Structures are given as structure tokens and as C-alpha cells.
Image (cartoon, rainbow over all chains, first blue to last red; front, side, top):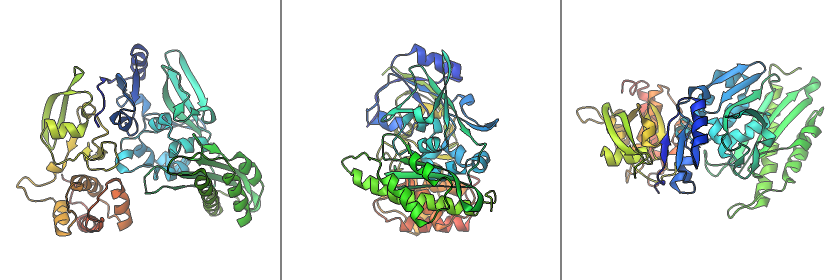
Length: 293
Length: 164
């Protein structure tokens, strides 16, 4: 279908975009367009005004600021995929990114667009939850920080106020993990995952886990951190039953269901994928030169 | 329909300046305004890949980009692949040779996706070719001929597409 008519705006600075957002009624922000444009073509979204953020250079950057990686909201997924900074400081992001859509959609899609659209199984949303990212927003009233745990208010509903724009994402990199994994199950490569599990592991002495971070997506309306397993894994030298126990904890989380996929099946996937994600991250950690012997 | 914009862009090396409705997507602009009907409109929501074109050298879904967003851009469509004398590009010739098409609906998108890969100048494995083609659906061939054609060209002429 063809989308409804709208007035097109092309601001060239964040200040200009904020003014436009404030002055126009029924406006939508256009990032990479890989989710919004399908919604508009289906006429699930018919904004009267479309504010195109693609020409705002200040929203497009990947840089290190102190102990954090700052990623501009309009940084394209392709730029993240090929970034040396991401590869070096946040390799789990790249692992996840290679499972986001296809080459053609990553050439246009942005991290900010993905975070604001908030699909329940979106990889980039899960990675932000996994890495304790902070969303930095901007409005005419000033700037605000929102933690990833407060970012989703509900199904596909982000925490932005009216008149507010996501400016950049800040991810702590002071403590690089020793092993990571991002495993998902989708019907076809590049499709939306049904369930995905991301893991980061840190090793201490004697190959014991000193810290773990685990995120499940596709289970609930937004990604869930498996805190109970993260705590249980601390100080443990894992074996097969360790992963099985953590996987059981993942399976116990109530899962959503729809016409095609039952909650039982999602919980089954949560168990299997948690096991694989943990095992794979641990294997990587064991061979990491940074992990202590 | 009064939300028109002036659009100036280059398509297959030719400059165009047109008045277009803001809501017109890039593939409809190419087909209906420029009469370049090689790019196909399949699903109109970014799943099938039939509308794939190159914008500033990168493959995009032309149904998920508004024409006005291509302001100042350099667009290449399937019509831009063949040589000036009408002879086929290496990828097109290999598709012909390996039966890389039956109905032909997906072919323009397949070719543009592979053209981007060709321009990267790598020698990809079969897995890499299949991964790259995962964003383009074909309902006839079962992909075998397409993958064979792609592998032959990408591994025979690592730099064949760079000058285009």
C-alpha cells in the first residue's frame, strides 16, 4: 500500500529538529525508516508531519568519552558493523548486529531508530539492556538521561516525552567482558527473532565466573535481564549442570504469546538459547587473553 | 496533494530535477516518473527485496525510502548495469548462463544486491553469498542458479564491477 500524505521536513541541526517537533502537530521523527516506513505503508502510522533526521550530522558518531562509548542516535547499523571502536570495546554489539535484518536494511537502519521503535525482539534494544546503556535525550527544556531498564514503558512504547529526541546512547566500557554471545532463533536468517539470549561473562581466578550479564528478548514486551541467574553464577566454576540450572531459570519467566507462537514454545526456546548462549560465552572467555589463568 | 518537494538527483549517471509528492517512495519515483521500470515493487514493506537499488553505492530497499530523501544522491538501478552498447554486465551474463532467473521478478533486486557485493571487491564464500542474498526472495529458482551465477562472477572477477 502507499502511505498517506504528509508534510516533509528536513532539519539540519538538532536545535532545528527540536523546534520543528515543538511547532508541528502530529509529527513523527524519521530515522532510518526501516520500521516506520512499513508502518506508514500499511497506514498503521499516518503522521501529518514527518521530520527527517538523516541530515543532522551531530547525531551520527561513534566515540569514546571517558569510560563510555557514545553512539549518536542516527548512527547507521552498517557503521556500527564496520566500526573498529565497536569491534574493540563492545564486540557483543557486533555479534548481535550481524543478526539484525539484512545488508539492505542495515545500510539505512539506525541504532536510535531501533531503540525508539522498540520491537520486543530487536537485537539492539537487547544489547542496550545487556550493557546497562544510558539513553541521552534532548528537548527544548534540556537534556535527560534514561537508563535502559526504564527505557521501555510497554509494548513498543519508549520513555521519550513529547518534544523529546534521543540524542545519543552511552555504554560503559571500563570493564570489558571476557566472553560474550548473542544467540537467537528466527524462522529465517534476518527475520525477527522469536527469542534471543545475549550474555557477557567475566572470569576471575581458577576459571570461576566473577560476573555475568544475561538478557532475554522476545519473551516479554521488552528485554529482561536474568538477574537471578546473574547472581547465582557469581563465583561459580561452571559445568554442564550450571548452564542447565540457569537455563531452567530462564524457562520459568512467563512468556507472551500470539496467534503463531505459544508461550510454552517461547519458554522452551528461552531455556535452550540460554544454555547455548552461556556455554558459548564461557568458551570464549576461557580462551580470552585478558582472562586470568 | 499539495505536499510537493523539488527533488534533484542522479540516476544511472543522468541528472533529474522533478516536483514530487513527499509521500512518493523511491521505487515509485523511478518507475512512474522516470519510467525506469526495471526495479520492481513487491511487498512494499521491506521484506522481498525486489525494489533493491544502490544509493550512493549502497543497497537499499527503495520502497522504504521516500524519493525526497534521495536529494543529491547518486542512484543506480538495474538499467544502469549493462554496458553502453547494450551488452550484459558480468552478473547479468552469468544469470543468463546459469539460469539464475525464471519469472524474473526478483532479478533486478538480486542483481543490485550482488552488484554491491561485487563492488566490495572480495572473493566471498558460498555461505557469504547466501547470507548476502537472504534479503532478496525468489519464489521460482530455489536460489541455486542465482548462487552459482554469483559465485562464478565474484570469484572470477574480483574487481570487475568497481569501475561502474
